[in-house]
Length: 306
Image 1 (cartoon, rainbow, N blue to C red):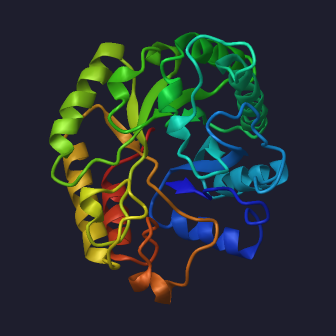
Image 2 (image 1 turned 180 degrees about the horizontal axis):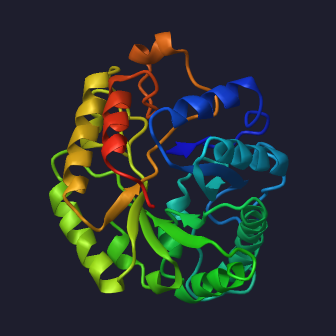
């Protein structure tokens, strides 16, 4: 499961956060991606302000890791960059060739590297079993030299497993999978289309001979969402049935692939809604919804990455 997104300062500790993680563990999860976001102003900004609000403090990050471990969970620390103006991070990008006076890949990767290495050090100190160096950075994926350099700089800081979370449909376009230990992607594929997408991903897994799992996967409990599971703003009324049907389809298809190692389902907030509000909640979290039992049942039969 993915816990705590987006990592708003002041929410990753206390009674509500305790309760949230304890309830999440009851679903039978054995891995958790602790996910936090830091902001840059817009897609062409070159400064990532990870030490400022609203990003959670280092103490909060350490609390979340320790809480997860106290529940017997393995941890992947996942720092992510977002744009303050609301633009999706996949559109962060600069000129292919540096131009004097214009923002550049060189400047951005310098700031991004400082951001990632800061959390890699925390992951090492707190004994996280996995570290995610990036999430859905589609326009950056082509910058192979920079990614290889950054991962090489992370290795002396962090000794555990390293992954990169590419976006949906992008698994075959990353040319540096050999630099990480595990391939992962965001598996927001439409209901009924999983077999075809898994056929495609299988070719990538075989090519690189690496383990694979979905660092993100899930569906809002909303009418129409199973066809567009990545669209958190899709109009439609609340529907636990729609979310449950999506999970049943996804789990069934993925269970037939021996190379599929698991999921960090999206998502489980640091503060849960009241269980009495579950039927009217149309977000991704499956707490107290029909899909919770679907997840629990599946996890009883299958282990996440051992």
